[in-house]
Amino acid sequence: MNSLFLVAGLLLSGFVQAQPAREPLFTSFDGTKIHYDVVGAGKPVVLLHGFISTSESWKRADVRQALIDAGFKVVMLDLRGNGLSDKPHTAEAYRDNAELKDVIALMKYLGLKNYDVVGYSRGAILTAKLLTMDKQVHKAVMGGISVDFSDPNWYRRRNFHEALTKPGSHPELQSAIDYAKKSGADTVVLARLQEFQPVTTRTELAKIRVPVLVVNGDKDTDNGDPKTLVDAIPGSRLVIVPGDHGGAMRTPEFAKAVVNFLSK
Image (cartoon, rainbow, N blue to C red; front, side):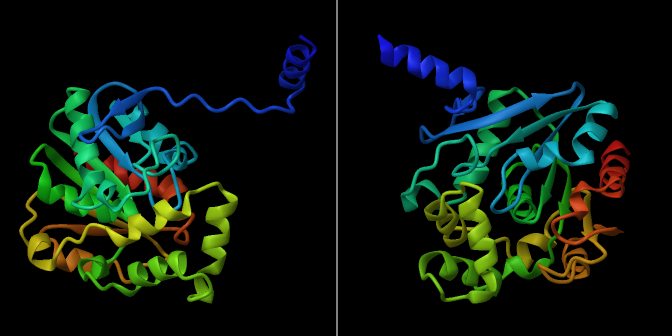
């Protein structure tokens, strides 16, 4: 009995932190449970977060509220292996575009058709592949990325995978690895995400026919020259906003560019 009073006292005093609520959860095609949020009303748009990140990153960005205010229904999810979603460690859980299958299945589960997609950094890489997999995508925004991800041996993907599986192999990435560990990210999962990162070839990009906007920070060179992606996708266009790779997506200018593009 005394132990029960002790636990209750610790909870009240804040020494024992309650686990964040994972609901709502969606059970995907292979049984993996995916955390998601839906806010706003109107035309659906799904936001795809980047690497070593979660859907919480969108809640700190102006674009989320700007889309709600503009009359969009905003869908955010923690991609498998991240945040409040399940974090399986097996290769089978990440191969064959499993993350994109989650997105497609979630939108069907929610009954949302003819939707737009906004992806940033690794989320933009997923967006490119989604455009080749789901004809329900109406428009897409790809932020903080160049065409370099179309190369299966892209050095950024390869180096991150090696840094996560061979400690000390890439000192230049150690600060990112340290940040991942500090933030509570699962480094086994992060390695899987790089190992099985979707590749959309230049041939596939050239066949995209939906409207695409590429947005990049004026101080962002992390993932290469965004102009190369515009050159690869017919009819796409580029908007430059203030900020480096970590900050551009949080700016009012990014929000304005996205809302203006999706509202037309």
